[in-house]
View 1 (cartoon, helix red, strand yellow):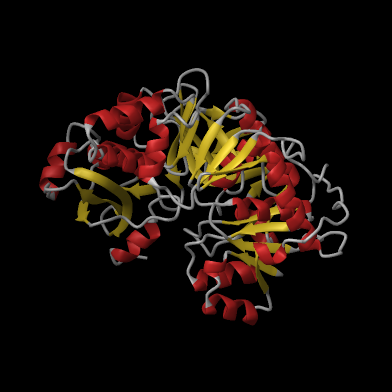
View 2 (tube, rainbow, N blue to C red):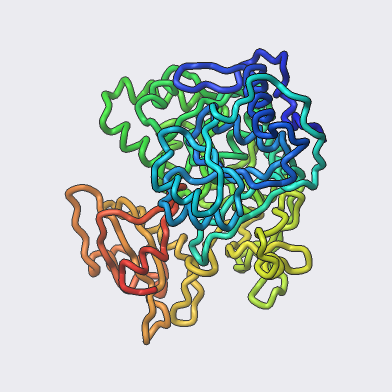
Length: 499
């Protein structure tokens, strides 16, 4: 394969690739940045031979330069969560056996330098690694070379390093270019964390591969992004459900003309996508009512990229993640790995595709245990309803075994979110002598609202089967969430005194 890899990254391409702080960079300028960084990174060597190069940088020209430069030099890119604590960084860096950590100057704390010294890892900024002049072109790399290491969320075990090759990444990108009809005149804001497949592949890499323009934000800047939406800057918008909720809350603080301008800006986009956590049906409906946009919900994970999606053309169904993407085979299997064929019957999602990761880094046992006959076992439960997949949740945390029933926490949460007093809710199973696991609701209430268990039980009585109605109700100020806005239920169990 070409060291360029991205077809739009050419020395003579003057179309805008990136916008950061009102500064635009063409594909030609980006290519020049990447070439200088690659030369400095190689420093006379022929290639990096899959050395792990970690970087601790928010969304920026520097981030993109490092990502593409490491790939061009033949290394494995290891982007890290800029919100990580030092203990988490120690695990990531030692697990990856990184040889170099690239940081922004403001992230070079004494604590981080000490950690790198302890782990025998070099540390440098992008500016320090830029070569003053371009050296000889880097080598041509094969598709099977390892390219990217991302870490799992660690909700069920210590975070594992997920390794993707150039082949699996290009399969993921081209699959989404086809399914979501990316165009070279698309413009998209990127504010998602860039240590996660959602921001890296779905937004940044798809945008650059298509020759589109990506606006970079270190975090979600509600005011600035909303203003640009009102100015009709963007054609595509991808976010987690929490961002859509934040926008709706922000609308409530604005004069009606400003809200209308922002909603019109959304209405004129060609695509709004929600992912990385289940989109509640009430939110799906409210967003459509406000903006006219029917959110496209999809399903993916670190190991597979995107696997299932509602269609770009055709019905986008609330509460469902759609159908397999091009080049992706999906099946459901029961606890004995027998195929589940009937509609409405729950089973674990298993995937076979070129999109799949290569391995868990230096963990052959975990890698082997994740596959059955070449199918990757996702650990997510789903049902097929009228041809569309609906996610029930993680087998380890979202499937509650109560009174002989297997219940979907996500389904119960979706119903509870319709209660007028509930702003956010998480449902989990807590150990119980009678039920095995008692369905437990943990709720954040709307301002100036109150709710007790008896009121909730009565409200639920005509909305769900008796065995699904929560047996317990807890109130909290906020739900614990990870960087992608997904509720971390193990943390919630710990807060409630169960592990």
